[in-house]
Amino acid sequence: MDEYVLLQRIVEGDASAFEVFYKHYYPRLFRFILRTTRQAELVEELIQETLLFVWEKPERFNYESKISTWVFGIAYHKALKAMAKTARRSQEMDMDELDEIIGDPMGNLAETTEIQDWLDCALDQLSVGQRAVIELTFQHGLAYQDIAKILGCPENTVKTRMFHARKKLHAFAEAQEN
Figure (cartoon, rainbow, N blue to C red):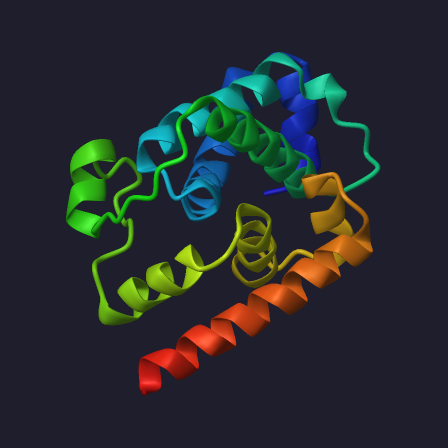
């Protein structure tokens, strides 16, 4: 699937191309938004807002980055705005509760595992910006340059966030071993 061809078809108003685009990005956005915001109640709404933006304004893509960089950038900025609107409250959520809230729309969301629980606890130790850098680097395979565009910050800031995130994750792992 060539995303550039899909996006061009979306510009032309092709709903079937948007459906393919939507199905491709939905699970990726789901994971990214959930890991970034840590607020399951925001995930579905933010995915819809992000993909609605793509449907309504596909011509806003400027070809200066990858399409995924553009889409994740939209999602990240919408997530930051939504988080600013809601009261900052830390909440623990197991996968059963998450499934109850959002269902299983794509048919293969994460099962509760010991590793996932550990990772969720570890990621809770990080700031929003650090979680976003970790998620975009390791789950989506993006380069620091692309992440900087998504987050709207200099590439050196991305590197600094990664450094501090790794340091916190290492300390968390050592604490769990003891």
